[in-house]
Image (tube, rainbow, N blue to C red):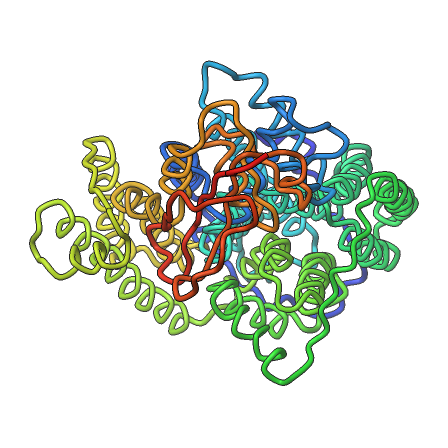
Length: 568
């Protein structure tokens, strides 16, 4: 609920000498029903929380680290997997480990670790909404006043723009996987969204925004992104220093203090790690636009249009704040060799920019987005349903044969709950398409309803109908349980030079005592595991004999060899 003081006259960021390009009537500024928006957010957040295994690689490694901390197998100040140190993103690991300790043994550790991260994703959506709302309430962001009245009221207009920003964030394809993992990047995303809110809400919320700016920079340093935090602080300080709001300019010392504290925290945690990968060839440079095309879809279509249509307002807060945050994220992604995890931090600001394109969008462009969304997501949903029916009934036969060929030993599972959830999501999509193709042209956020709804539909179908297939393809449970059959309880399993994902799977799914250090064999481990190419026959290590070969269901190039010590 908005308090009465939120209806006070709009603050001025600077002298508004150019007219606004936005033409919005009061009818167009009607807000998205709260129940519908909350239901859409819940449908996007919750499916990735329940009923699945941790997926390789980053998701499984992060969860394995949290479990190692919670069970006391590694120190809280130096997280490790199988004796191997992991990165210095301590705060996310502490968060997941604390949730496991708090909810154990009532809740499975994998689910317990995911719960706080699901809450962080929901908070990112809320921060995106409030950031856009504060930015849309400045005078420069308001639509043109009509000669005879009827233009959108400031608060209603800001609410409609904020609703559109949340829809744009949900519609971004880059958030689908990374937003549902239990990794440090989700804490970094929350911190970046919190800093964006601090910049956006500075004219309205004095002390909360100051504390939020400092907390966001500390969170970035404690979750493994101190360099990004310092770059974001520099960009935010420049934007605030040039602002026409006196209260916004007073935020600069707080940003500087937060940056200094973040640098000291990163030094204490040993988080300063060189991750720069400058492009070495033209093909390396081309990886960035290829990543942007799908990762930022559909916001990348609308954000440049915002910059063009609001080009005479680039120094005003509603454009400068999200543009600066997005520029830092995109530059970081380029410098890190087209890193999608760095680009993830640019999703909230690009969603804000995309929302401000809607008041200036041509009807033909809006119709093209709707048409493309209907075709794309209807075909994607239909494909998922065909694969599901084929796997469950054998009709048609070819999709089930393809699944069996790609995933060895796949066993289909049936769940009434998954089927009913998928049917409900499909029914909501049909209703949404019918609503959008009807006479509902006045709502400002209408152009992003179908992209957000289509992405959510495909996510629900993937994590209900397709969950058995995804678990079989992306989980290490099967290979870990097969390896565990050869290692008696209480015996040490050496895994030198093996991936952290395999070590985490052996510790969690196989409940084995794993030592991943190169000195594991000399320390007396009786069993050894290593990944070998299928077309090679390497000799067993001295003093070991081969017990068996096991394969991952989807790995056709490598196999896992299990050895046992034959001598002292």
